[in-house]
Image (cartoon, rainbow, N blue to C red; front, side, top):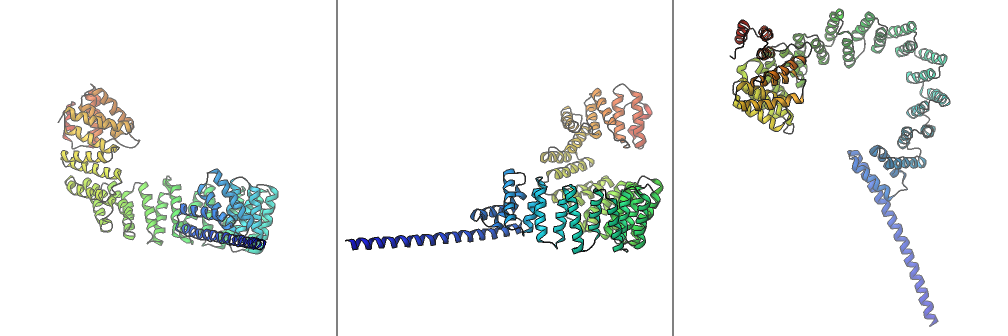
Length: 590
């Protein structure tokens, strides 16, 4: 019996040992499986990140970290996602910063992690910790200038004199490894200026010049230093020297031109700007920006306008195939209201860049400003060779045709229909505008029934189309004396003056409808408001004056009415109805 029990005990012990061993083996297997799964998920997170799927990336990094919180790569990536994605969610932001800290302490050689950790320290006001982190990273990478400069910037941001001195020391050591450069000279000079150490600042500047005596940037920097510190004569010497050592340096010429501008020397500014544009190594983009600034500075000085025109022509002659310069010249001429000259430049632009529909539209608009609507229409018809699928080109062609000749109404309607069809169905505002324009065209063609259909369609798809309401209301009032229809027109028009109470066009329409309803007192109130809100320099149309004359006449002010009729007749001398009103000094309906 004892033998049996002993054997049973031994067997039980052996079995227990086997179970224990199996359990340990199974636990190890499960742990390895979990780590492999975490590694797989981490890899998928990186793939999603490369694809730009930020939400999926964040979720996958979170799952990888949940499976293996000991892997510094996982909590670094998750920390970065917390601080970059969540931003102002404070609990997760703080957790993200802590994860970045853990990664930094585990692996300070990971520069990306350390950089973001230091940036978060800076953004949370912990400049001291930021400096500590970057000092460690800089110490581990003594030859990397980018890391050194980040460390230097952190030291400077403290605005502590001792830290600033450390920044100077690090800059000097960086010069030993990376060599002298203007970037380092600029930084050191600005530091010395902060420390009010002008002797050291000037030593740096002269050292840079001695090291690179043929580099115009060194002299221009010296000029800027002296200019900022109120030493204009010294500044001019160094700016001029920069141009002397390299006459083709556009940057040096511009610095000298800017000095003259700041000094109020318009002649010097103009001379050096000319030289920069015509005799230096500036690229087209730089020339474009300089011409833009230059014309803004002198646009209101009539004595310089011939010079600006001549300068544009000389620059364009040197760069005849650059459409941006011609386009800028067209802008200048447009501001000067030389629409024909601007259109001439834009014609050359569309020859050079026919693939840009905006160039064509702009050219057509310039002809329209000259009231050369036939040429505007012809320009847009040429544009269709390149941009038949542009709704804006068809829209402007429709408008040009309509303005060129009333007999073009059918063709104008067809072009506006084409613009409507080409416009995205979700852009209801634009489509409503096109339908409203078709309504205008039908009204001009004396087809009020069709006009009403299109005005209503325009308002059905976009009820906030104020211009459609105004035009529909006005044309409705002009086509009927029926009280119910006039009431409909009044309601539409009232909505426009409620929405835009200072718009003179809408006020004139409402005044006229009130007149048609024989509400003469209120009609006068609104026509007066229409004149009060006319923009300065914007002459009211003959129609405004005619409406005002009729309204004033029926408000028992015939003398004032005649004054308005005369003004209308001056603007529309062929209007026989106006001529009779003026001649007989009384109101005629037709």
